[in-house]
Image 1 (tube, rainbow, N blue to C red):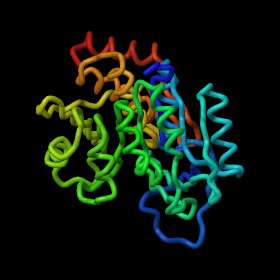
Image 2 (tube, helix red, strand yellow; image 1 turned 180 degrees about the vertical axis):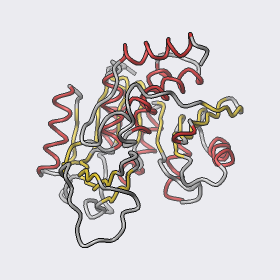
Image 3 (cartoon, rainbow, N blue to C red; image 1 turned 90 degrees about the horizontal axis):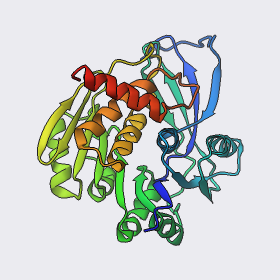
Image 4 (cartoon, rainbow, N blue to C red; image 1 turned 90 degrees about the vertical axis):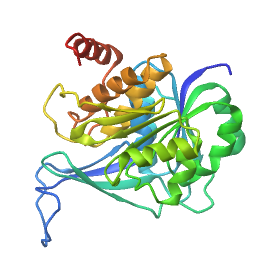
Length: 305
């Protein structure tokens, strides 16, 4: 591999419309005034990971299906502004979009528009192989076209990571991603027994590292058959939104991993990046930079974190 790209990000490009609501769950009412406004901005899981990795100084290339529509132009503009190469495949159904209801405590409820996808959506195999062959690592979103790209990715020999998000440990849709990746991220939100699910991922697939984020409770890391708890990190500013925190954690972790850091230090990088993401309003797409992250990690390590 030539290593022209540090991380190839597949899938997860789209836009979110952000609506700040007075509480979640939102009680039924005929109408609610939204004084803060309703805003649409580029940024779904793949975009957030790409932006996070790029902000940390890694060379990133993003590949996904995108519509020829205003939403697609928002995604293209985000990548142009951040200097992130973006290869797109035409998506006649339109660019992926969602509506995020965000409560005062930063929690969110996402409503995904599943009409903007077709069962026969695919990423061209030759394109996937060529981009993967010039990359050190590939991070794969759990979208339908990416599932079909997994065999080709594995055949190139590139290492893989994926984020299963709020998988319940049982839904078979997630299993190909869980079993193909070398590094698996997921949330504990829907898991009754996180450790059991994490160990099953290792037993049934290729994963060497599994990380389960647990919000305010921190995260859990399974490495070398040892499960350890990763504490939360105090955010550098007030928490305003949790949107993108898991993607930021993944970006920070991968930054450390590709630098050859041990797993626990990678998880600390992830915790710092995730904490920063919680201070960024839903209406923005932003990430902390390399110097910020390394400086904060140094402070925590000197304090015995």
